[in-house]
Image (tube, rainbow over all chains, first blue to last red; front, side):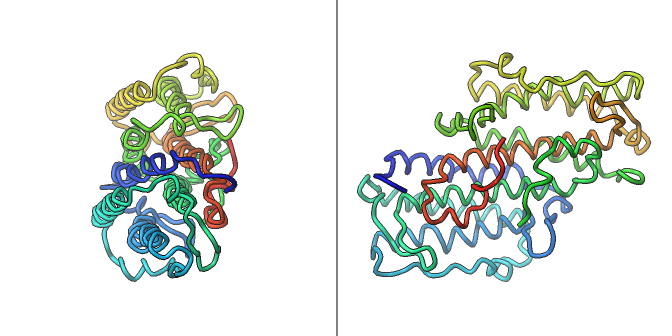
Amino acid sequence: MSGAPDPRTLAEARELLARTPVLLDAWLRGLSEPWLSATEGEGTYSPRDVLAHLLDNEELDWLPRLRLVLAHGEARPFEPYDRDAFRVRFADWPAARLLDAFAAARARSLAELDACALGAVDLTRTGMHPALGRVTVAQLLAAWTVHDLTHVAQVARVLAKRWTHETGPWRAYLRVLDDRRG
Amino acid sequence: MSGAPDPRTLAEARELLARTPVLLDAWLRGLSEPWLSATEGEGTYSPRDVLAHLLDNEELDWLPRLRLVLAHGEARPFEPYDRDAFRVRFADWPAARLLDAFAAARARSLAELDACALGAVDLTRTGMHPALGRVTVAQLLAAWTVHDLTHVAQVARVLAKRWTHETGPWRAYLRVLDDRRG
């Protein structure tokens, strides 16, 4: 990002971060198994996998990294994040339990974020990502928000693709069916 | 679609069709203007445009076409659908009003769908799409459902792209930012 971060970044990130668990709950709680377990093929996420990943990520990734930047700056690089650990950690958790736990974890994150009371200067503070190098607090907030959105888009895409053939001739108009997998 | 449609199509479509207005409400009601009016460029939809399009579509497209198939089969082709009419029809409607109206229209559609009490044979009945040719009731139900999902994915993508540059080095991990526009 060039120049100073927009001071609205924090408030605008928070709006969407607070909504993600609520929209996922409205969408996925009580949904039938064929939808919840649909994937785009081996190694890709089902909607239930997305919930488990978001929960794992919420506890281990964004807020802990923000905490590290605020306490240690670039002196202590972030712990690498294991993208597959959720498969063991939350094996066999039903969707309802994942939704409850994600909503609780996100609420804890936002409470801690609020308690940080980040100001304009804080948004420019920098930390060290183990693979990506120097990152700012503003970039972390934006990436956290966009990470939610990438997984919401993924859930819609995975659900849609389950019925790629069922749409018959309409497939030509439904471009989500041609989107990337994974 | 080859072979007989899966008899679960109706119930599985209905599950997702009922959830779309609720998830959009949880996500978009009260969201700030920069998010609601974000687009991917000229001629593309903002999240508010998606709501207006879904409302317009709900009143003029899927259920009216189902009604036509059940009453007239292929003898009366569907009315062509004007994809841009919503811009005039719902000009200046705030998001909250669009959300209320879409939820009400979808509830009416599902009540009428339930009243049709479609059986396995009904799912194979055929109508005539003005551009796509012969389509079945099962295909219409699948396309209606996937159409919702294509627009949910679009909202996530449009919101995410507003912060493409703000994510800084994280952009490399956030693949939704490289997805197609429009």
